[in-house]
Image (cartoon, rainbow, N blue to C red; front, side, top):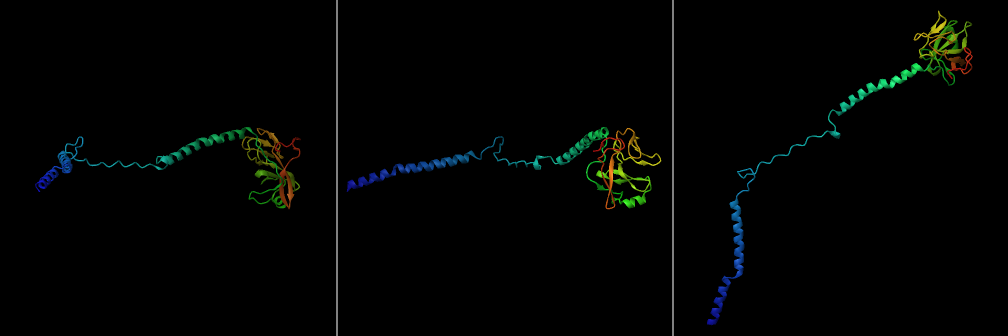
Amino acid sequence: MLRSLVLLSACVAASAFAPTSGFVGTGRLAHAVKARSTAAAGPKMQFGNPFGTQPASTPPPAPMPASTGGMVPDMGRRNMMNALLLGSVAGPLLVLPAVLISFLVPAKAGGGGGGIVAKDALGNDVKVDDWIKAKGPGDRSLVQGLKGDATYLIVNDDKTLEKFGVNAVCTHLGCVVPWNKSANKFCCPCHGSQYDKNGKVVRGPAPLSLALAKRGEADGKVTLATWSETDFRTGEKPWWK
């Protein structure tokens, strides 16, 4: 019995100093020490801020709006002004060669193609009988002929139409040559060229005679076609072919 009591006392004493109670106490002690050190440290100090407070956050700068396509707002106006400037400079430069060529090359008149019905100043078809009634002998009046060129119809002394028409485009620089009844000639007002009553050149600077057109008739209307035979005024081949 005494032996049992001694053994029980030894067990109780051993349990009081068991390692497990020491392990648990050590963990709780470490946690308490860590909490105390944190509280003692206080709020975290910021560099240059003696009060240890957090600085107010600064909002980021607003992004600048970008124009569509990466262009500045007035680029459209600049492009328009540049185009106008370019056109004002390039226009005369493009026209100048054509003007110079027109001065150096004799004007063409007449032209190819089949016969067409002559038109009066109002755009109406020219009828043979009506034209002769309205015009006197020796009359030379203009109609619209081949390629739209002004062309003279000639009324003979016997009140018939001549078999040819005379193109009114001057062979110098293309002016329309009026008929001068008192001088019995075609006289160009631009540079003084003169042609006889049939359109043959008699005075320069025009280099060639006026072109001829063959006058015909179809359904009572005046027709004009290209004169392809020898020029009876000069005995040469037509220059306008």
